[in-house]
Image (tube, rainbow, N blue to C red; front, side, top):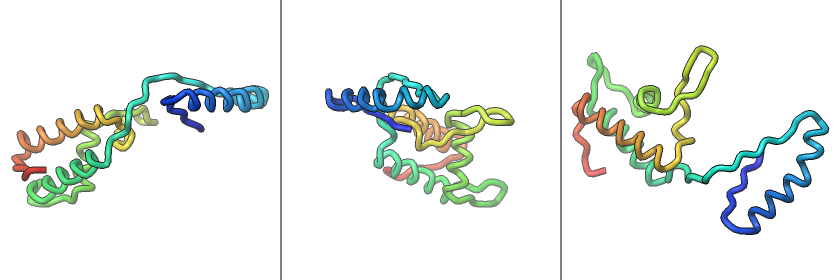
Length: 128
């Protein structure tokens, strides 16, 4: 699989060259290519990622469920299941990876996580 982000004329030319070289042979082999054109949205940033894991660390340090603390990886899975996007799975919808979210989607997700943590779990966040 190849991904082309068309920021400059040369990038578009690379896409066209790739298609000219591979489309025919792939089609003849019974494996035609699929081309989708959409606006590029940047994946979540390193800064967003660091802030998210800091939020989860605060939750892990402050919240007990039935007298037990859970680490931030457990809270990540729980939050992802509750607030993250879903994909079709063999037994229904499954949580999708948060690493596939773009910056806008990830901001919305973090807002939901933070709001839930404050309102429902009583977390008091330091300046993160």
